[in-house]
Image 1 (cartoon, rainbow, N blue to C red):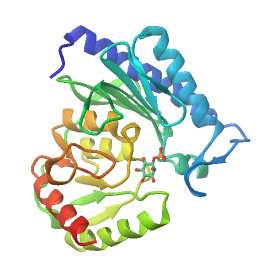
Image 2 (tube, rainbow, N blue to C red):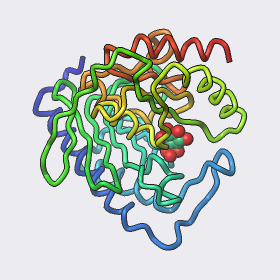
Image 3 (tube, helix red, strand yellow):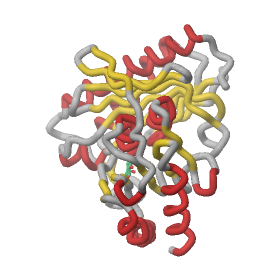
Image 4 (cartoon, rainbow, N blue to C red):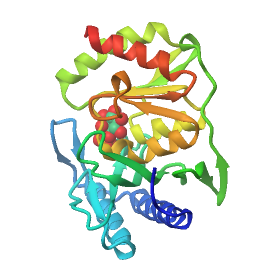
Length: 277
Ligand code: LIP
């Protein structure tokens, strides 16, 4: 549990919200030339807008929190001089952004511990700005989870689903073709046991949609700390639970997220799929 005061947490959440919204406005400007480059595979792309968004986030947050560290999807990697590190995804859902497919977000979280080490960190405040919608999901430890749109905060809560067979579940797939093949085999195991699957393309928004009750659950293998840090906190503050396989902390190995009433059954189903494929 964090040692920070209520007022400190409120201020950290405010910084996350305002920096995420400012970066989302920059992303929304969408220049004609996106300056597309390739990363880990020819389907794993980054644009000039990703880099500009992360640069803006670091600049704004560093002005207010000069001792904190940074860990971002693109270039940000500064060791903290304080107990806190800002974990940044300047555009989560980059491929969706590339196609202007309206499911992409700016994710900003501040965490205690080192997000580079699985299981050695936890988010304590965060925001996920839904760029196309112009809204922002936000939460702080012990403060609840909210969706802010048109200046109004709507409290979020997961569904009470406990029946896999009528549950709507999201997942995602990696940029590596071989990994995608295994993920597809796990999906073949999962899909017959649930209502239906959704593949949105942004882990941050998938986690927030579970928090909002738009989904009953989400699982994915291969996502990074910056994809999940803020959405993980929004989910838990909305009554949800995110773990890895067999109760481990969520990590790039596996994230399984749902309301507390569904999580055990979804975790067992995904674990069975991982074990057999
Ligand atoms: C994305 C994740 C998503 C995953 C995509 C991609 P990015 O992150 O949020 O869950 O399925 O393949 O990794 O690369 O857009 O920041």
